[in-house]
Length: 425
Image (tube, rainbow, N blue to C red; front, side, top):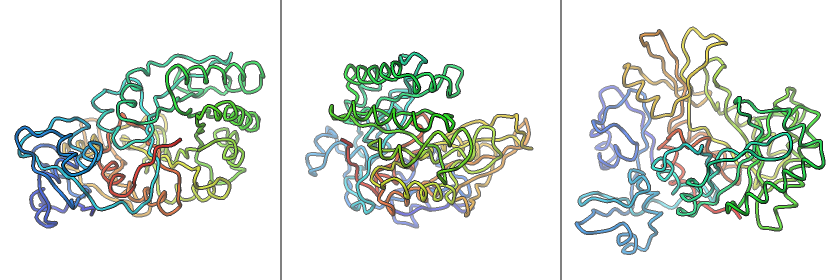
């Protein structure tokens, strides 16, 4: 595998010829537009298949998999353009085998809102070991708001991904409720009711783990929150169910701020089976234009986490999105969230050139629209590769994608080439 950065005047055909690969494979695996339009500075993943198969009339994906002694899932993962569907056409060239992964075995989870389209979800599920429908809300009395997760659970079961229940203090207003968390965490009866509600829902729906996301807790709730995670773990572990909690991106135990003070990394690492580092949102809706997950800052958070939590419990959160800011920047103007594919479409539409910030390890560009100048920071193969070195080098448990409604094809190409997947217990 190589990552190629598009130069002026290059085409899909000329790049494919440079590497001796199929132009069709290069175009389809990177989800380029049908006309092959490229943007100067755009990054492409170039794959070098070990074994390929040209589809003959009447052949099926199952038959081809059996012919080569591989699974249908392997064919899905090696051919992103199949979109997790079994429809193949005569003359289509499928990648049967790639070089063996060298990054080790990891888990790969992904969060999905209930409104995600089935087609988009099933396109990504072959690359995931865990699916986390987001989210059941925690109410002040310890009960849960409902979640229309049935279709997501059906898709996860069909693909063989473990479904993790998500509970959070996210309120209907869109923010995380400190009040709801305090009401439950500091009251024995309400806490017991919440644990029971989680267990009942997991049993009813067939969940195999729970992901807990309580944010903006403040220092006073740090100990009660860790005690809750421990209590939840003691209740669910005998059933064979796992507990994961999400952690804000801290760099020290005493980092100030309501977002950070309520999360005791060491205590939560002891209590939970795994923790997910939310290593994103440096660039966010109301920040100045910047990378969502700048590599030096992510590395600093990971260094601290590794100092108090075993590596085999740490899941690195990866963003699948970027932001589009209007310039000049104003703190009261919200940036628009967008996928890497949407960012590239904007660059093509307005004739922008993509730059790359070597310090942050992130791509960005500016463009002029009818409403003025914009600056976009997003993810591409280079930024994803920089982040994916961290699980491999540090022996982390896995990665978690926020979120699956923002399609990032190149991330899956890189994951598939570098890691084997292991389903969590």
